[in-house]
Image 1 (spheres, rainbow, N blue to C red):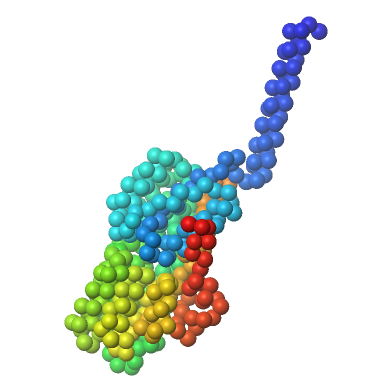
Image 2 (image 1 turned 180 degrees about the horizontal axis):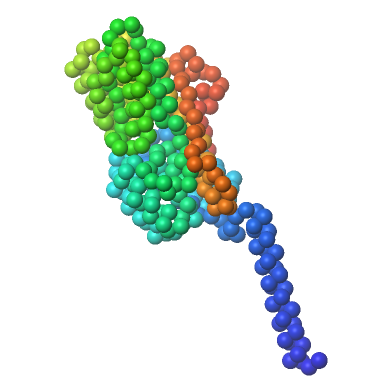
Length: 335
């Protein structure tokens, strides 16, 4: 065989070997159930402010799943939950960046809906977490059953109230956020069915503890017959509790809240707050990333995952299950 013939033969063999290697690599990749490169997932929370422990714990769950499933995660969000426009801008940027998947905690049920549709149209899998969006685009929604959680708050307040008439106020956070809409539905459904209760109104703190404090202080001063307050998230609950404590209304006004933080644990221990409904934000973050990975692998995922909630009081606060919920490993990834 001539030198030229030998060269052609070797080139053919090398090409065949390269093709075989590529086929083997792709087969191994398929068996692993994912792309060769690490998937890039953008996780968009409602607030990046360091003061809210809920989002810090959810972030820990995200990072734990990212480490376990070898995912490159990027956590972004507006500084405040009320800044819907900023979150919309972040969604537009994410669309331009074209990640493999997006996890979204929507700041507004309706205003984020068209952007959820755009994510789907771009061929990017969307997972919603904590708060839903008014769209069929999400492949899965991972959150507390907020209607049921609100019902738990209402039932606990009813249990703690006396036999006479009770005037109640609801301190909520961001108007038109799916989670607050559903929690309020649950609370109102229980209390409206009980003729003892009169609900004054729903007051919005914007997720700001100081504003919740001022609202509650004004309500207690203006309504001497106010007997109960419901706080629908962490800042609203803590602000309400501070006002009850400062006005020395602990024996008169019963506070039942939402979420867990160092300040809320203190309110429980002091008897300022009688109960709180605790969510599982770590599980939400972890399962959101895990579900995104499963979608990218072509696996079937549930349309809805309820991460659950429990009622914690001063009497059961030291039970092991509740201690794990009240004191999660914040910063476990070194951030």
